[in-house]
Length: 178
Image (cartoon, rainbow, N blue to C red; front, side, top):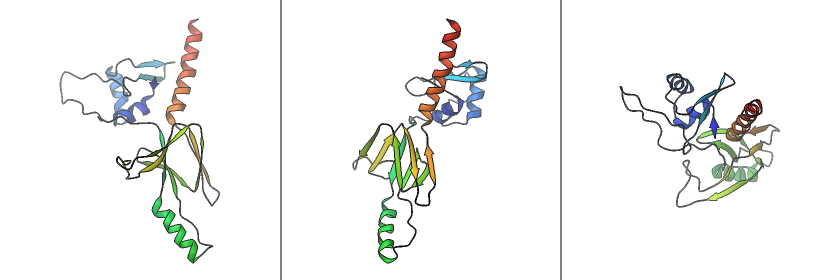
């Protein structure tokens, strides 16, 4: 699987500019420019392989593996708050109860989620999520988050999108070679 500079930066927990510097120095193994402008960086065990330098400090890339999956979290305090609020004032505006996240970044909040593809519901009380949740939904598919005020937000999986783009680019290159 190949990724671009932004995704490689995310996997290594460094900036995209630093990845470009490493590419210019030739330190990311197997990286190639595709069509003269897009970098294709191969992954080894889920991360780009960066060769070390002879001088200077050793690199301290992030030891944990980042994942491109989206997680849907249930906000239990807001569910309880909305329940109590509706008893007092049925016309009151409810707070969001679902949030779509990638890592610790909240991508969207709402009241209804439509997942366009496979997903799995995870219940892990002995090993909770990094935010403390014991129940959440994981998906690599695109999710659409709806809110009571009518707003709709689409949460794409960047991994799937980049794979599709890389496949289109590689398919063009293969067709040119034939």
